[in-house]
Length: 68
Image (spheres, helix red, strand yellow):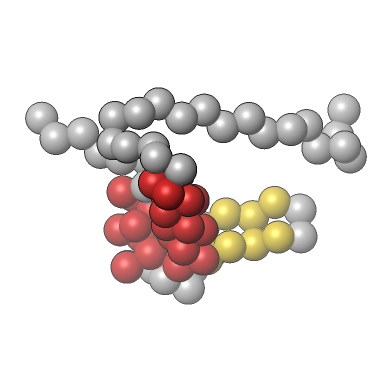
């Protein structure tokens, strides 16, 4: 069984629906093309830091100050 990466569905949708809205939050909106580009930049940055396939990475997201 082949494992899918987190980014695989986004990459496929970036090809099929490049200019369609993929995600939005408050006044920010990103197309599948933009989201895929950001994921690629993050991936490259992690690789440049020495992260390899199979390494575990955690993402911490801070609480939005405008929400309780």
